[in-house]
Length: 293
Image 1: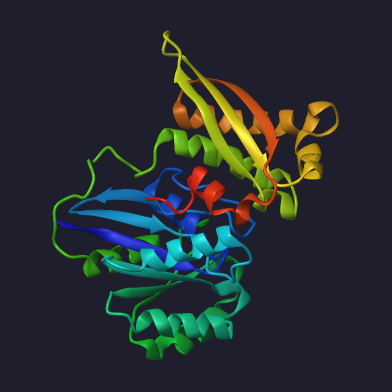
Image 2: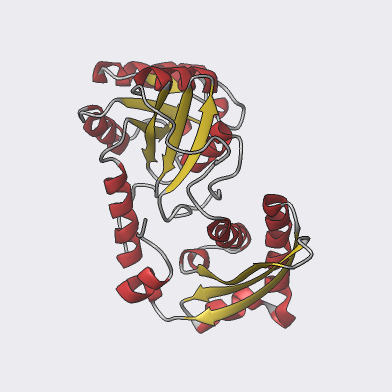
């Protein structure tokens, strides 16, 4: 059979996490319209007839503005090493930027088999798509246009990747869909809902720590306690909201997704705490679990 690791990279908001979730058929990575949503390396596993594909989601490529961003960019750079196939995603509907072209040329020149994936083709004119494919044709690597949202060309992408994978044994048990724990995903679900509800700087300065993750003796309910870490007192006030309204709303939103993910009822308790400028503290970044395998 064919098996291997496929690293998925691209600039922020290129659609990496959305594509992996659709290919795997389960939610293994959180998604939001905001850049910096993915903070660490997450593997989603797709099993098919004669293959197993381990897709590696990575933080988006962008200029680092703090120590956490630097850790995230290192995670992306490290994820390109020792993989079997590289997918470089480009948000096609906005047109090819000079940075897109330079990055495509850089990754196409690597020794690892590379596929350029043009995303979001459902919201762009066909004439622009054909022009972009022509622009990239001299790189001598496959160029596959897709729409994860509409499911367009995903079978073709899988076929291209399968052809590039080496022969090998399965990397994970067949019933495993991710290398990340349920506890990790619970924290990510809460962070996703914060990203979706709140604007601008607050979500980027937020970390979520799971203090309790325990299934009751009856096997029907999980007791989950979370700390939401932010960087400023005024951010804490916004997260909590007047009379606790905001935190209640976002917690209810998160709890619904947690129950779907776990398949059981959830009793959720959340606390908001301030850790000033934690994204520039190597100790706190490590304590909050970023940059670690």
